[in-house]
Image (tube, rainbow over all chains, first blue to last red; front, side, top):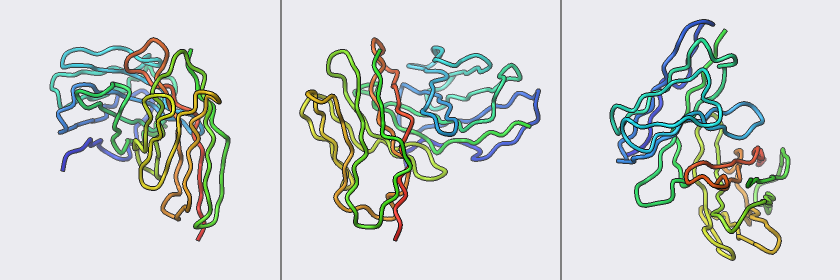
Length: 114
Length: 113
């Protein structure tokens, strides 16, 4: 089945450790996104990638890094510089030939840092 | 810039009741409008969209009409089910961006049997 997969579903880390969240899609989508969701809030964009080897910072990129070496994969690293990393992280992608505003989401990874 | 305001929840209904979740927007021009749904513990799913004024988006029994006169995009369903319990987000493009979305804060719907 085609779709967006994020793993793991739950992730626990100690403060001061970097952690990488996986996002894979087999939909042949070019554009991919990372969002952060906090309780009672809407989504906030962390990073955006339109094509392989290209990505742009979103509204809250500080303390995060990404890579886009393959079309299918867009991993997000939460670094120790991120002051408040505990959150629900969502990856998304957009089909070719449609508006980039039409976005399809993965199931998310809930990160807890203590 | 563009923005959306959703009715605050939570909304609690009995099964088969009529649902309305209000969404009003402020925007330059007539951008596309979206409703997303997030079931417990999951990511968001695109529920429906409307790309121009007076369009009606529909999916899974849900409908929303793009009304420029009232700058609204209210989500409706004639008869809700327990399985509709979720958080619903209204969204529109951020002004001047070809990829950024501005999301509302979400409305939690709980449907009781």
